[in-house]
Image (cartoon, rainbow, N blue to C red; front, side, top):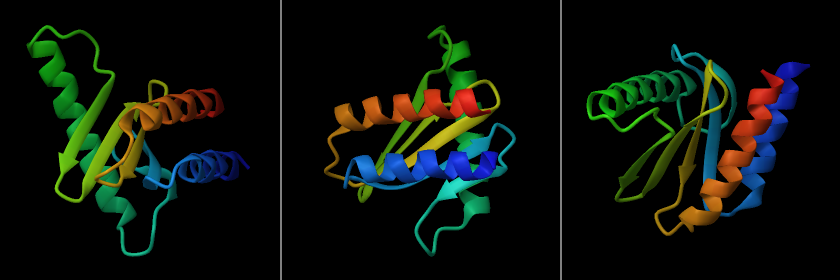
Length: 120
């Protein structure tokens, strides 16, 4: 039941913008909790990489006195990867197109992370 609700949040998030290509909820230790990923994307790989990047981001923010980590944004030639905490034990990872309107995506992702946090 809870997994269905989490998947529903992801499906709704993916539908809010044509710029969002995929999303997933990952535990902080790298296990996929729920996903709305297109075929060909390995859930385990997304989970492991998200956990690793968040861990590195946390440490970087602490070491450079930037306060608590809020999000990690990676820009590549073919799009963006955005990671944001969804409560204390999970991360919301979103894949977006290269021409995405990031301001709107940040807003939608923040709302989705709050909903996920309440469900977890």
